Structures are given as structure tokens and as C-alpha cells.
Image (cartoon, rainbow, N blue to C red; front, side, top):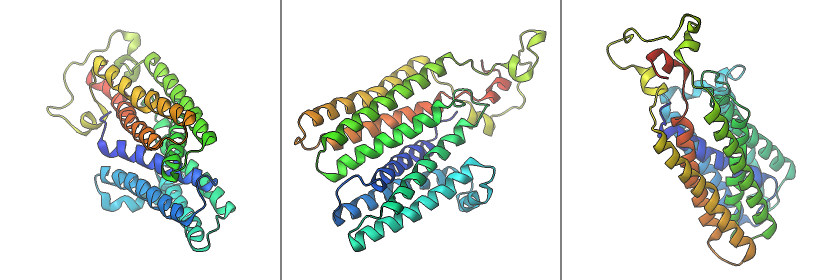
Length: 300
């Protein structure tokens, strides 16, 4: 599929923002009011930036509000409802924290649960598509949740300004888990058969299906959005960048931070590296997706 920058920014930024909301709601980070302001602005900017990017991807952004109406059947609509609910509950949590200096555990826990549910709904938008075999696996939502949890915890470590060895080790463990899940996702994707003309037309029993002539004289929306040609060498290079920046380098920085907690700048550097790696990973997530519609245009 076409790796639209708006979708890449949406999934990466909103995942990081909701991960930060979840960990903050669970009580991580300093208790001071300055941190309440900082984490509120940071999480709000990340979530707003991600959702704003997703709205720009729509052909008619002014109709984005209609996404709230189909929550009974649409994961996209459920995501919109959950994102709004998460923002409202966390806003109440942050406001109470700033005004009274007290973190209400009940509101925080509800914020964390809603944030996790929102990330899950985002992942299910892609997981539900049987027409994209690479996405149609439980590893997709697990990877989204693991990356959100990892990025959110790295953001907590970066914004708090004080290194905590237990949290650093937890971030290292989450990073390893996310990397393992993504490696398993890539392994499955490599082993997954791409949709063939024989399978999609159900004419394979008659022999090899070949296109007699194109269905139309010019390109159309399906070809622009659902079909993307990616060279294997380029995909391998991007995959290495995603693994190196998203997992290997942050792991090294976190290991140094765990060994020498007083070293400044390691947590923010790990966060920025992880974020850069996620951008490459998410670009590849869309670019390597092979929609079944491509088989009708002769793609094998």
C-alpha cells in the first residue's frame, strides 16, 4: 500500500502520546505540578498531532466528525470515540493534579485503560483486513501496544529528568519485547504468500491466470493507494534502519543509563532514536503491505 506520511505520523505520534498517558495515569513520573504541566502538554501535543495527521489523510477532512457515528461496526469509529474519551478523562486527571497537587488513582487508571484501548483500536483498523495478509495477524495489535508502551515509558524517563534504574530496566525489557514481536511479525510476513491472481479470481483450477488487457486506460485510486512497488534491497535497508535506530541504539543507551544513572541526555537520546526507528518501521509497515486488489492488475 502507499505509505502516506499522514498515516505514518498518525500511528507513531498518537501511539507515543497514548503510551505516555497510560504510564502517567499509572502513577509513573514525579509528583510535582511542573511535571503535571509538562506531561499534559507533551501528551496532548502528540495525540493532537497524530489525530490531526489522520484527519488530513481524509479526502474531506471537514467530515472527520462523522467518524464518531459508526462505533458499533467500525474500528476507525471506535478509535475516534476512545481517543476522545481518553483525552477527556486524562484532561480531568491532569487538571485535578495541577489544581490540588494530588493524583487521583481512579482517574489515572481509567486513563491508562482507555489509552491502551485506543491503541488497540488503531491496530485493529489494519488487523481486521483479510485482504492484506501481512496485517491480518494477532502480532499486529501486540506490536502496536508494545511500541506504545515502550515509547511512552521512554517519554516518562525523558520528561522526568531523573533517572530511575528500575524504570530504565523496565524500559529495556519492553524494548526487547517490542523488538521480538516485530521480528516475529517480519518473519511471518516473509513467509506469507502474497495474493495471487489464481487465488483472488478462484480460477486457479483452470491454470495460470494472465491479464488479457488492463481494465482501464489510466491509473485510478486503487492503484495509487493500494499498490506500491518496493524493491527487496530497499526494504532490507529500511528494515535495518528500523531495527538499528528503533531497538539496538536505544537498548545501548538504556544499558548505559542503567549502569550510570547520573548521565544526562541518555533517556532523551534513546527516545529520539526510538522515534526515528518507529518512523522507518511504520513506513515499511504500509509499503510492504500487499492488498489483494493488486492481483487483479497482474501483480504477483
